[in-house]
Length: 82
Image 1 (tube, rainbow, N blue to C red):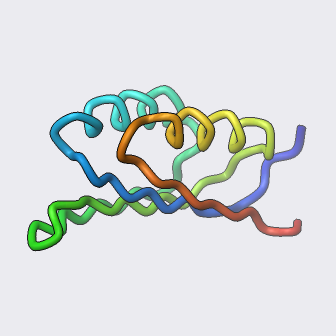
Image 2 (image 1 turned 90 degrees about the vertical axis):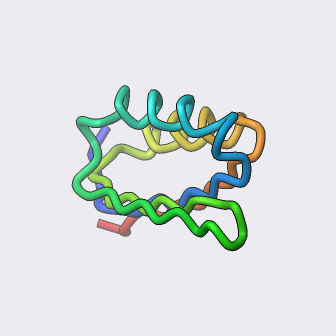
């Protein structure tokens, strides 16, 4: 399947319990990640990660599904049309 450029936005609400699992998954899918930016927002006790990816829709669905299954993690994504 053809890969497309896109982004993934991840919000981690329970960093202590979820961050290791999120980082492990991102390492597994590292071949698709072009850029990663992470910001801990201490005042709200959340972390926000933004990824720029070059990925197929199947791989994107697998990654975001696994991330979304982690308790305290919210995920949104979008791919370019071309």
